[in-house]
Length: 153
Image (cartoon, rainbow, N blue to C red; front, side):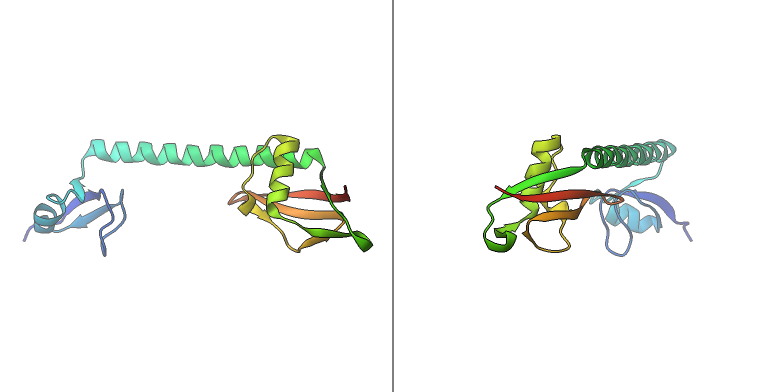
């Protein structure tokens, strides 16, 4: 009986693996199905080295993104608080409410850091004047807490 051969997948193969994974398959399966459809390539030492380099580059890129998010967090928390001016009616109630988009715009105007409105986490609706704490997700592992002060126009 022939021994299994090791191949690196170039695309997802149901029941076998994801792109970039090294798997062992029967020689006939590799020769007759995977190779002709360019779903996999035979594993070579050069290919292993190339894959290792890609993993290292990806890890370095992720580390750099996290470090940049940490720097953004430090910059945002150094500013202290962000002031949003809104029209106010009776009893300090706002006309409308402060939205995540409003907060993202104020952060951009004040600090120059462009944050996505979908990353602004509002625990409660902001419908009155006052000071509120708002979470901003800068990275999957980094969250900054901002002080938002809502004042009348």
